[in-house]
Length: 288
Ligand code: C2E
Ligand code: MG
Ligand code: MG
Ligand code: MG
Image (cartoon, rainbow, N blue to C red; front, top):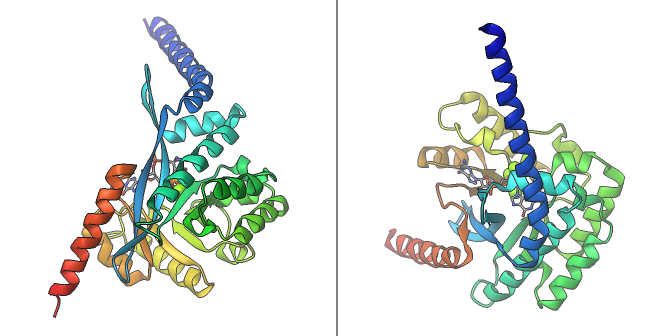
């Protein structure tokens, strides 16, 4: 019976592997066509400045509702796109959508900055800065409306080449952020050598911040050192009000998370922004 169970287990595992393999292949096969047909979309998540409760930035996050597989998490298809050599198409598609959106929002929200995530592969692409500059020019959008997020690991893969690309991007006027900070192996001292403006502390340290003293110490030390070195500090993944008080005390400048809003489709984000700012104006008028 034992041997039979084992064989059944192996068969089930093998079937699971085959299904995963098939799913991966479907994703890789369908992605280029979906991009060409604009069948993916972009959601925007607000980043709120604690000092004045203003939202002057948002992160753009890619979304794919696949006709037969349903919602595919970006982590999953981005990783596959990287392996399949499709990431440049994804990044270019995102940049085009977000830059067009920035053009649309500019009149009403001239100070709004939209952040796009880059993959490690994008950072060794020496043509990327020129393509972004062209896209900005086509849409008559200033580089001040754009930010880019990169991970520590992406920089470490090939520091010399990546620094060149980052310097070109920064020279255009694009703000650069280190994403998921604290999960990789680089230090703030090392990041100081990069043309990076902002450090985003990973959600792993934020999600239990109100009752985990170790996380509190890590966030405090990171925020203090990062600010001392001239970086803006953002906390990612705040979900509740107790955490907000902590993050304010610990010296974070900006907070992003479900507490303020989940990532929203463009039109919902625009409504959120208006309501958030009109509500805050009411609150500050009511204050003595
Ligand atoms: P990320 O860049 O660190 O993005 C933040 C992720 O945390 C997003 O997940 C966001 O929805 C989620 N998040 C924000 N606030 C909270 C919170 O309070 N609680 C929880 N539980 N989660 C929160 P999402 O959209 O699933 O994206 C996951 C990752 O996929 C991103 O992590 C980024 O690495 C990658 N990604 C997303 N869009 C793109 C893209 O257009 N290009 C590239 N290269 N990567 C992307
Ligand atoms: Mg990000
Ligand atoms: Mg992140
Ligand atoms: Mg991430």
